[in-house]
Length: 280
Image (cartoon, rainbow, N blue to C red; front, side):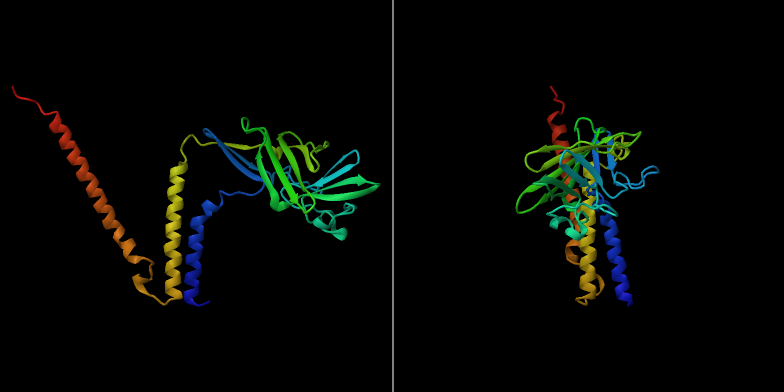
């Protein structure tokens, strides 16, 4: 790799490191961080633990709920995997097709219609989001909502993951609202939040905003300099984009500070003059 390319690569890597703390705030579909006063509640449902190496994910590759004539298969935080006994039903085109039914979605429901099981995809991995079950009690657990849109109908599945630090209770009930909205309940240790006390010592929103602004400015200067140096052939200090503006910032800041100091001193003298003692 030429020397110039190596320099460009490491400069770009350094700029990405600056943005990494900002990007990490986004979190995944099964991660949630909520602050209530001086406490931060962190949920990471897919994180491995000693007793649950796959987190809240089913080790079988799927959860299954059977109620009356309705069968539900789903997986949290990932797509389903069937190593044996895959779903056998009509209408599985949106979730893997007849040969890989259930392998290309996160939730599938089968209803008995006229003696035949007809499948409907009700959840996909890109359409999963997470929220608190109870905004007033963050430690109760979280609810994961997933959906699937088709030309015929819009379907969804809501899985309430309640905190149970002792053992796991797999879903055994299924609620149906409307024509294609399903809900079930799961109790799992991964549904318990990790609570951190911040005691007001964090950067706060203003400090975070300043860091984001500095990273954006630094990234703009770095990427602009790399582009001008390697692609436009501009060398030396002239490779810095808008060089005159950046070099004038210290002088502008000094002038602004001097102006503020002069105004403050003038205001102080005026205040003292208004309260000067009077001689009778």
